[in-house]
Length: 254
Image 1 (cartoon, rainbow, N blue to C red):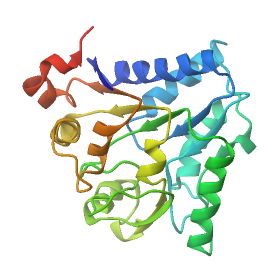
Image 2 (cartoon, helix red, strand yellow; image 1 turned 45 degrees about the vertical axis):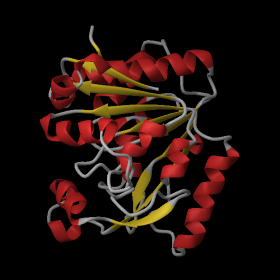
Image 3 (cartoon, one colour; image 1 turned 30 degrees about the vertical axis):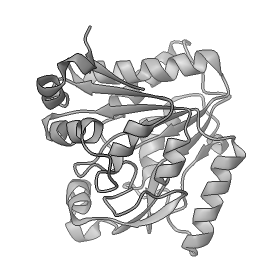
Image 4 (cartoon, rainbow, N blue to C red; image 1 turned 135 degrees about the vertical axis):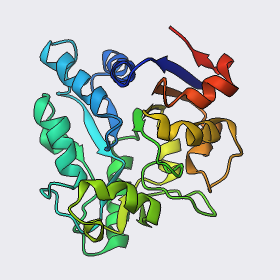
């Protein structure tokens, strides 16, 4: 089932996303949470930090896995996703550092690293709630448009459009890594619940295509139409603009 929750602003979308995580932690304090990077979930992370500081939730028993990491960047590189997660969430909540997990961007053997990360996720019993965003080309994690849906952890060659989108974070486009490790589509689909945060007019068309168009690996996020559990889409008004125009009945309004 897909729930599309209307948010007027990006801030409201972050709060709605935080509500999903909060509800999960109320039910299961030792939840396994799958986190994502990028600008979209930052507002949600800020809200979770606030709720933790206020004593409403705790991450002491939580374990986390992240969707992806650039290949070739050390964990302390200021553009690595490990750095991002510590800067935007982990360093500001009561989680144990040893309970946070990401792919190793400096692993020398990609096949061994893929197997290691699969084993990490399996050892935790899978993911209770997986946070997702969506790329301009429909990717989730770093699962780029392809002719098949991936399963376990993958090493992905990033498309030019993804490199272009991420180049704003680097001094030069040529500094952007060209490969990344990512949870596969199969791993994402095995999560027990999914919350997707999407913001901005630039995502409106691909979001409508993903949730209401043809299910195809050419739009990786479209597989979520077949997700067996609950997908909660928290998106602002701009990101929902095409869906509101074409499928207004599908959106939960306040």
